[in-house]
Image 1 (tube, one colour):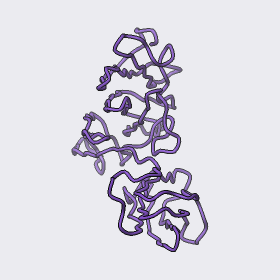
Image 2 (image 1 turned 60 degrees about the vertical axis):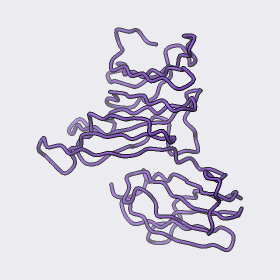
Image 3 (image 1 turned 90 degrees about the vertical axis):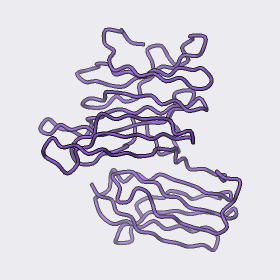
Length: 261
């Protein structure tokens, strides 16, 4: 860990294997960042000395919370001001899902530096999260969206790991091909698209704008039968209506989604 004089907001949770994951905020280069360390049941640090950087971005990332899963993996959530400016300061909720080595899966929804949990207008803070016992967690927070006063509502969300899988997550395979509506929708800037394959198929999944221009290829590979999920990030795109289209064997389907920034 870093010098304890620079550590704040420490959070810790222990998984079923006895590994403790600790996350903290620390002051670096004029702002607060998030770092983490894992210690096994014998007290041996498993990640590099000084901890792993979880979020090091402009403005403050603070108030981390660790939620351990049963498979040596953890979620880390925090309050994040990266979308603020010198004129307008507000906080969003961000998080990430780390494996036993402290790595973020590059094929998953979770991005290095964190992915958005909630970025509604104005401020989200005072959050609390618990393991839901099904590979994810439930998080609730105070939310100031839609209000210029100090009025707050209470919002909640379930987080899970929408990793682009190549096998069925259930022993029961889908009966038919299906392309589901993305969730959330509208979204900003990330959403998850789910599709079902009753049998293995060469699969092509692309995103298009209103003019029919291709903006992203999300899948282009032979995939096994099962339910698959893939994340789409529209951070570099303008607000508006987009379409996602799948081709899997003889199956074709198109759905509409709305990016709202």
